[in-house]
Length: 262
Image (cartoon, rainbow, N blue to C red; front, side):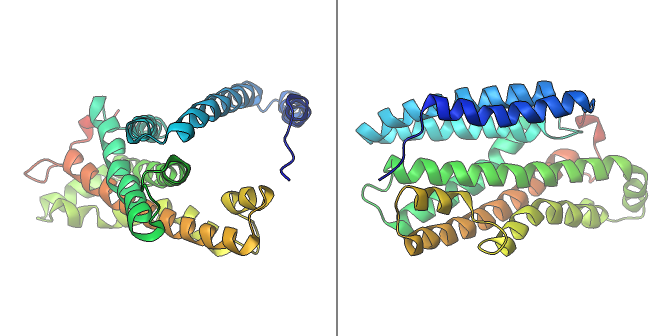
């Protein structure tokens, strides 16, 4: 049987977060406000999505799944832009992040649902929405890290890059090292997670399935699938982001356009 948590149980758990907030205030870390807002957002957002998913699961309609998927992608694209120190100006930055997530997360999720899992219907929300959510969340982190590293590197080494361009190198050659470093920084978190899974940590999806009564080996198989999907989604997303960023930050004459950043 699943032990259902009450509001009181969650309130008791919130006191642990409150204790961290008090420590932050005492040590003058100035994190208590951010911690409070993050905790409040977590509670409200998860409760809201819980009631929405209850409705969507009851009807299993492709239109509902599509609307939720598009909403998740659009919000994640905004988060990719917000996490960068130097970002592409205007709507282009948001479209860049959203486009990279669309190409990677949505494509990999569709492949998993149709080819690997083979559920009928393939868009069954209890499979489609959790899979897409996990892929978007992790891919979003990888894309944001790589984009932040790329734009910061271009800004700091702009004189070196411009000298390389003047010597006749094309834009791809001039920024190769910076792009490689940016891609590595985006991939490192998922590589570390995969290397530590099962030994240092028990991933969240597997833990949740085991707590809900799923046989451990079945939960492990799903977790392996998720880790592979996240790794591939993150990789494809980073490649797409680097390609689109290159198109935006260099013109057709291979000139560096840092005026597009803010």
